[in-house]
Image 1 (spheres, rainbow, N blue to C red):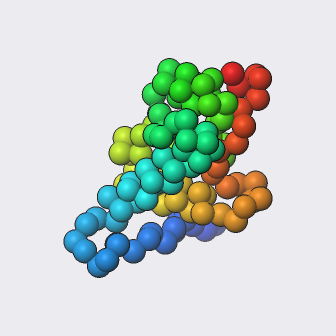
Image 2: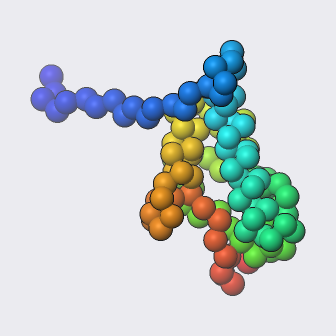
Length: 119
């Protein structure tokens, strides 16, 4: 028997909006889509209105055309549309937490200029 303790990582989940009957995962998906669409629109000065997740569309529409990239995406969560991320609410809660970290935090999920190597 191992003498090492087992730890369970717990992330608090955002409450449901307006106390409605919507599931927390749906709320997280909606919040994240709003963050990513708003972030890409702001970072591209309105040239791109919606985030693209498919590799070819992300490369052409976000990185090449707009000159921006999303930085800080955790390696343990696949880069795809939030509705396609498996694992329940926990990975979405982690993305939500990372997007809302203070500006300047190195772990913050954010849009930043793409380098020449990225393009």
